[in-house]
Structure formats: C-alpha cells, structure tokens
Image (cartoon, rainbow, N blue to C red):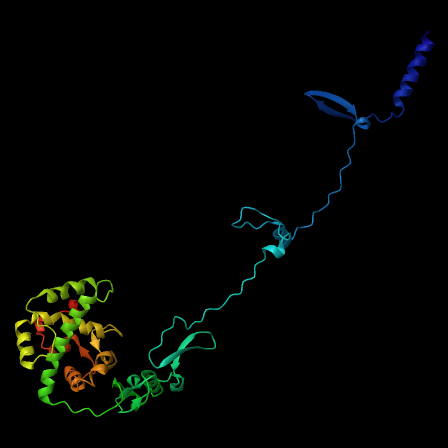
Length: 328
C-alpha cells in the first residue's frame, strides 16, 4: 500500500515539474454592473475600418452650392435657370457736363479723365440772330450779331489788355450816343427812383400766384401801394419828381435797396461789378444816355465796384437809412 502512495506522489511531483500549458487570458466584461470573465479567444474582435482622409472642399464649390438669398422669397438652385435670371443692363454713363455750369462765352467739354471743364466757345457755333433787336454793342464800339457772339469773343481775349477792357455796353447795334451833361446827370436819379418804385408796384399788382415777390417784399410794397399820397406813374416834370421825393421820401428807400439786391447775384457779396450792372445798364443806355456816366459817378472810390452805401448815396438815400436787411 505504501508502494502505491509513493508511486502516486512521484507522478504528482513529475507533473508539477513538467512545463504547464499556457493558461487562457481572461478578459473582464462588464454587463449591467456584473463582471463576467470571458476567455480572450471568445471575445469578439472588431476590425477597425481604415481611416480615409477627406479631401478639403474648395471654397468655390461651396459657393456654387449655396443659394443666393434675394428679395424674392422663392429660392431656386443656381444653374437651373441661369438664362432666365441673368439680367444684363446697359449702363449709360451720365454726361459730366449735364450739371456743370459755365459762365457766358464758355461751353463745357470732357477731358481725357472724363471730367468736365469750361472752354471758350467758338463764335461760329453761335446761332444766327433773328433780327436787329438781338444785336449788341460792345465797349469797343463794335456791333456783335448777338450776345452769344460777344461773350464768345470776349472769352477768346481773356488774359489780354483788350479782353480786360471789353464789356457789353448796351442792347442794340452801336450808334451815336450824345454825351451826358451835368444838368442831365442830376435829373437821371430822379427818373430812376420813380421808375423803380413803379416797377415794384406793378409787380405787386400782378403777383397773385406768380411769386414775383417774396412775402416780406410784398408787405413793404403793399404799404407803398396803399399810400394815398403815392405819385402815380406817368411822364412827370423834374420839379414834380423832386417835390415828391422830398415829401414822400420813405416810399423810395425800399425800391433803391430792392434794385441793389436784384443786381447783386454773381456772387452775392454786397458789391456790384460791371458785369452785374449789365442787366440794368444795357437796356437803359439807348434810352438814357446818362446811364454810363451815372454808374461811373456812383463808384466814388474808383475801385470798379459799387458798394451798397455808394449805390444808396447816388439815389439820394441818407446814410442813416442804408440798411443791409432791406436787400432781400
């Protein structure tokens, strides 16, 4: 019996000394809070898919796929109706000369950079005059076919001594105008004052909806119009005109200021230049041969400009009654 026990022990020792087989690796798998040991061979193997790098999408491609949002709430994919939604407009470039002002004698032209500029007008491009009434006389005692021909010629002489002295003298062909003597020069402002007063009264009578006068001007002329002492328009003697000016002096203050404001336009600076005086001088000279001498006398300081104070003094308005606020 002992022999069998010893034999079994020898076998057991031999078994322990022999190399053992590799024990299976056990993985722990958690299933709903319970740990289950699963042999490694039985654990499912999931093969990883190869990672494919995505090619970057070009910006232009994205823009092509985006639908442009416009005012129309109905969106369509770009490309479906290219011909239908494509609008081609012919853009007509605006002429830069349309709103560019040039003084008399000059016309607007466009330079190489498409910018407007004023150049002297060719007198030959001026339209022919219809009649003699369109003729004008220059201070060079030359008759021009029209004011267009005159100013175009004056422009071509800019920068020269002759051009500096050349001005529009009066409307109509040149003719002999008798020299103005001292006695006639004294009478001229009397007739002129009366004429200015009657011009304003006439404008007031006709100015219902024509906007010939401003509201402030209407209020001042209304006082003259309704004054019973007003001397009515007519061919009056110098004595009567002188007497009326003395008795109704206040009626003449505003008309003298008003006429100054009508002439002082280019620019409005409180001075009358020879050019600004032209609208009044040119029509008057053929009828009133003292016009030129009168305006020359008004320029007391000989600076070629007539200030408001000089203008008022020429018409007998007192210094204390000169008021710039009346030049409306």
